Image (cartoon, rainbow, N blue to C red; front, side):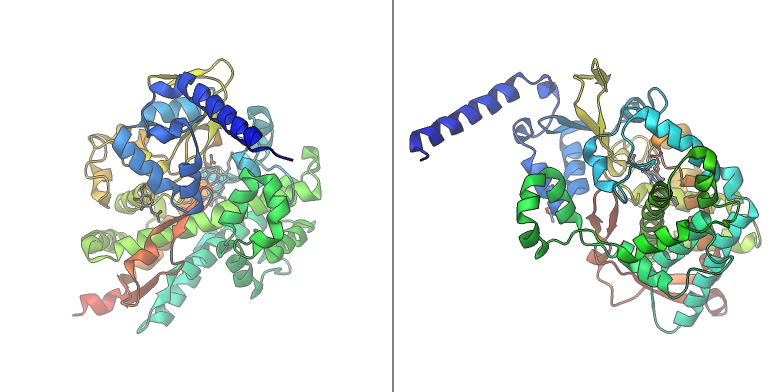
Length: 482
Ligand code: HEM
Ligand SMILES: *[C@@H]1O[C@H](CO)[C@@H](O)[C@H](O)[C@H]1NC(C)=O
């Protein structure tokens, strides 16, 4: 039988142990709330409430660019920290087991490999397909152009009512990414009306709490699994899983696609590895680009931003037929969109390597978890980004401060493990905005509440809380003809 004395003694032992640890930690010099010395529970509470980004940003505002957020975890927001953590030695510090949550079909992909060597091996195979020279080559761009033109058709159909951008932009990103990975509309078009069902399954995912619980408390998750499912569902994407497995079983693949590259026998990847890598790129490329465009077009449609929308339209109308990458104001709009609403605004956790390292001015022992979050890196330094919470594309056109702004731009992370899909994402964003704003003015639909576009954190990405975004599309000739 458990005696009360034994229980009391164990509690005392636990408290003494925690206190000793907390009071002797080399991280004690780092600013932060007092409780972070003892527990990570407040941080986890905010994670479970889909509020980690805001929580950490508030800590940065209160304590500065270096903050201790848990007993063994520190958050940074300076350019020097970004360089040290994500770029030193090429690809920065190794990833933590946080990334185990993203394994696909039980395999590790490029994104989920933890150490440098495994990562470098996989990246040598993949990088070529995402190089800018290959993105701007016509077979890749054709898919994006077709997607943008389908999108514009929907805008025209919506005139007089409104269009749910959230769904339409995710469909667009789905088309662009699957085109790049598989070129599915070639041969015997595997894609059909199933597209949208698969997109919805990937996008409308409610597994955040379940996945966090499983990650932090795996044993309890096993025991409580069934009860837990009543409140928090596990991630299940049967349609997408099957779609990718079937598509990757094709043998006559189109040369420019990622699938074609991964299937090359000299790389020795089995069918499941190939499918896992492809499904991972769908997960990485659809919600990010869709959410980023959604937040940005919502912002451009607000009364306070209509003069920016007008400037964009003027540039597009003055340069009909110009290539999407030759338009400076379009570029400024996209940069400012990604600065204010980086689709991955959250911490990207890494381990301090053997021997410890100094980040900012603080020495950190090996094994400390360190991270930067784009949301704060983009806002904390007011000398580089004055009035940081305001959306203002014009700031990117000023010559002064250009290198400083670029150094603090972290939407695609940085270094060897930064976003491999960056050029594809930028091409998608710019071609869509060019297609829309050379034809329409966009305005928010009266049915929308502003909270619906609030940030709802997932594991590392953040999406519009309401998962819808109704906009009205007014044809430009109707406006100028007034
Ligand atoms: C606006 C859109 C996008 C944003 C904001 C974005 C952002 C990011 C960020 C911040 C990372 C680093 C994550 C980390 O260190 O944990 C990343 C990695 C990655 N992204 Fe993107 N991404 C976007 C679009 C895309 C697209 C379109 C694709 C491909 C179709 C893609 C594929 C990947 C892959 C494969 C990685 C892992 C790279 C590696 O570990 O070497 N992303 N992305
Ligand atoms: C999110 O965190 C911020 C900053 O700590 C806090 O002010 C806000 O109330 C939190 N929101 C939720 C929904 O927990």
